[in-house]
Length: 394
Length: 141
Image: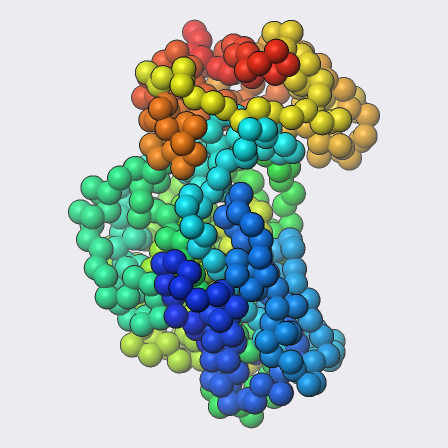
């Protein structure tokens, strides 16, 4: 077990307004989310002395403009002018989960006391994923000439492999889309709040990249979310009940850029990350009371459920049936609606929901008697991170 | 059958690690990067062997016969250059000679509905311009 188990906690959380397109600069969304998280903690902005983010714009072929299409640490520094700032970083290899883990490490090292982590996501005008222009350089030279563009197609080919190897049918995914949308109706911050989705809507929706139809893909939005992390001792003195971090992990798999479609790489990535998380926390999948698993594309949840050990390979689409992922089911899943419900804000919202469920602060969508709350915060293959939050720090 | 005649594909730009692949394709030969220490093929090319970390790598010819490892059918062409071909099959091929090396391609000369995991395919070569020829695949016995 991890010697730092339950020594760090998530305290406050914050949300910006989520809109389909950019009506105000992205920096304003990020600021709203960060202010919300600090206020939720009962702290003053001057108390914040650590900052971390993963600022990447996942849309390809668009200009990167700080404050407009990304919100870097520098941008946040300029807005907040923190008098006691003592540590900051922005990460590259492990998406937003990596930024959270860096903040945890910084708190454990004692180089800051209250760290804020935010994720701000921009929806550019026009086509989200552009293929390269006339020429395909680097890794894209082996994919773009064949019409492979964004990560959706890379995820789609792995999903086809999964479906055909295991003799499964994509229609079963309707349960995931519909149940998550049901959960979205209890999350007023979500983009699809109060917009119903039926099984028929899913089954009749247009195909985008087979096996993915429209409702297998999260919708690009403009928005931001944020959390405050601190030491367990300090967290106990703050306003909200803390969610204690029992363990975390990150994927240890290497995949060559441009090599797409390997289902086994998704599985190995997820296994490596979750193994660290189970070992460090001392828990196993059967101990988990509620799970948030990244769903930028629906199939990511399948790879997560199987590679993290919640069910056997080939069985995830059966596992989610029969009410098992509902709030009162065996494994309540993506209880905030997931990215399919909130819009594309990446995995920090999954981490937030994991923490809220652990601390009993999920309101109308609170799962009963939660102690162990699991989070898989990115697709397991390239940037996968996993977390376990607990209600009681034992 | 997808109509590729109106599609303008992005043109690959070879670099130090990938030039032998494109030089061979131009000659109608499929060559993949092979580790000279552990003898495994890998694709896309990489500066080191991703299995044994050796740096002694060379491009060697492969038969060009293999199977569809997986595929997607593209219905939505975000990039308008591919719009006239939708729906089309983008496939990932695993070659008999090179297990683990995965090549992206399109399934040519067949309806997209013929794309299935495990279907046998063989390489064909599709010139893009005087310098670049794309390896592509069609169904085989």
